Length: 300
Image (cartoon, rainbow, N blue to C red; front, side, top):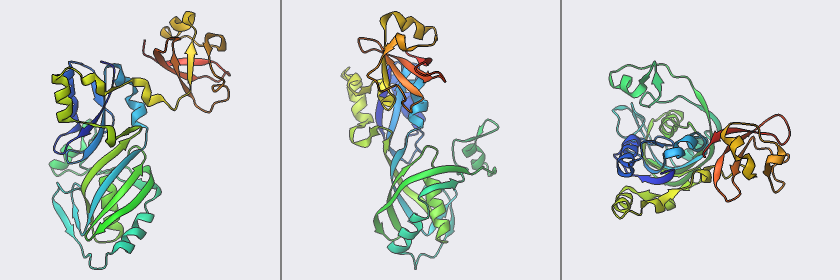
């Protein structure tokens, strides 16, 4: 049961409920997702099973793509359509050109304040639970990167934009900040995550499809191998008599593995280790000594 499912999350379901569903259908105890989607949001939700849960951190580190519809002229306390209206502004002067100019100000490295209605915790309590009781906690700004922010369609008062961003980006906060920038207010009307790392919505499986696959007992056709997430790491092949060294966390020296010459001088601090017959053995971390690797995570 080790691997990753690329789920097309439907609207109205929390990410936690999707994980619970897959845990029940598969019978696998260890199940987790890589990157929460709000209940109203849809799209790519990678769900990791078994030892796949141990590489969630690498999925979380990847960039993500979204298609967002942002409605100008109305702000809400949740920064999206599910919230209570807190402001209605004048959008009589807002046009496509003005929106384009505003988007340009949010490309690159920016600072965001996470919304109160989020899963971030304060003294062990999720912020959204505090927000529902009327409590507001000061939140530290965080730096994120907006790699791409493109207006693809404008029909007043809604802008449809494509976004590529770093981990930790709140698209709801981006919508809210755009409204503040134009002094008219705005909120996130809808959101689709179209990519998370190498997983795309074009090959994501819907929940009804997955349920049917479980009934037909062929659901493993949708299960991606763990190491696919690590494909940017260089790969090395461990000698048969050195596989136990990985299990025991011992250092691996050049005589313990074979490479195609890519490793030497490579800029990556990590590598993928395989057996001679192609089994994925684990993730290795580069040491300060040339050609010497330390096992970081073992998957034997």
